[in-house]
Amino acid sequence: MINQESSAETETYETTYKEGFPIEASPTLSKFIQNYINGSSDRELLNQDGTLVFSDSNGNEDQTSVTYYQFTEEQLKGYYEPLFQTDDPNMMLYDLKQTDSISKLRSPVNDTDQYSLPSVTMKDNNQLEIKITENQRTIDLNEAMKDYGVSSATKFILNIEAINKNNIVFVLEDVSKIGDLNELYYLFVDQALSDFTITQFKYKETQEVFDTNKLKPYYDLFPGDGNYRSGLDKITILNVETNKITEIKDNDLLSEDGKFVYLKGAAEELSDGEQRIQTIENYAKGNDIYEEQFEIDFDTISKQLNFETNKISIARTNYFNGDYIVLRLLYKGKTIGDGGVTNVIVDLQNKKTPTAYLVDLGIE
Image 1: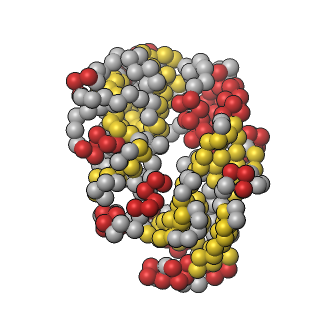
Image 2 (image 1 turned 60 degrees about the vertical axis):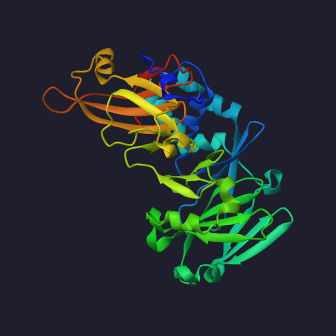
């Protein structure tokens, strides 16, 4: 995406509609496929010369160690190449997501030192053991989190959220409060394992956390560029100079990479017409500078696909990451039932010629 200096310079370009799946691989399509097959819990931790390394998410307390897997960008493109050749992309995409298929793409990372990844294990009595190359430390979570009411009776699900050359952040989920995003604990640790801090990002209490300044050494873990970063709670934007946060409105959607906001993209009933995307900096500043402006026309889509009606029953965003958006549209029938369903892949890589691919991928 190209940064705009003023809203007057950002034109709204007419969208071209094409039936079917995109005809060739692209970095943005690869990111979408990667997100779809890996799910929302696995984290891409690094890209080293085209080799992508991920954490394999833990789903229960019995998984006491963090594990990793890898594949290359070229392997990923080869993996989804059948989508360009099939007459049924819905079924092909479903097949690509199945465990038996994914296992052929992924390779386990057995040597964590190769990528300077932490070896992490939750020992008995909430003793968290962390090893990074020559450094090792055990954190007594019962002691470190006693102010949160944590004791030896507390059981955690352990995952890694992000890592860079300076710092690491882990996510600890209390199994007795599973599913409550307000009750997640974030453990920030420096790579030397000399310092750490633990916090929560509770709704309406996040500003107080940043006001303490205890997270300043770890701001490089927050997604974004420059002075504006998106919060790990995915509903806030942080100005790292002032420590002040801006809440993302309920109907607006943060991109997967944490760098952009799709205005009204999270609405339960997405509206057609002009669509707008801002950088997190411009969104936080509250200005009218837009990174992208494009049109979506539900009536045109219905006519092109020969649906019964142009009346929308469901319209929502399935995926948003910078230059790529995937929507789901369900049209009403003339009397009862459905009048047609499709996904819409909006490709904004070429700013002046946005393209919307109309194809049912079975993504709801």
